[in-house]
Image (cartoon, helix red, strand yellow):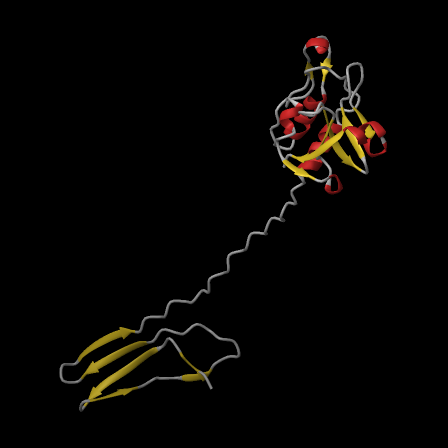
Length: 215
């Protein structure tokens, strides 16, 4: 059984070296816990007739710390493959005119030579632009792009890879692979950016030089 001390005066008289206490009352504790009470005591010393009062300090209330709410975790973002980003950037340029020397990381530009009066892309300008959207910098020259990345076999090609054709030294043409045997490219003066099934093309299959993955 638990007892509770009430906050009422308690007289303690010193007699013959002994302390006697009176007016102490105990009651059964209620079902729920209550804070402890303070006790006031008066001590009378017969030899001097003086009285001293004291009060026991009340214990500080205990307030359990509330747990801090946890911040919800942000879901992990699934980063898109850079090849997909490049492929979608190139597809957005379908129908843009071919322009010799045209194209930059910002989009179609006026070209040079035969492209001096046309805003558009040449083959390496289109791939340069597409991969810049994925954060990869390429040179504006087919032969240099042929060395800017990792060579992969044709059987391992994937979306966004660069396909090179023609020439005996540096390749003379570059396209961007879309999947299912289809590439997107800027073919020649007077043409536009278009899709071509290169695996079914006798010309492009014969002229194929290799596949490069820029990133």
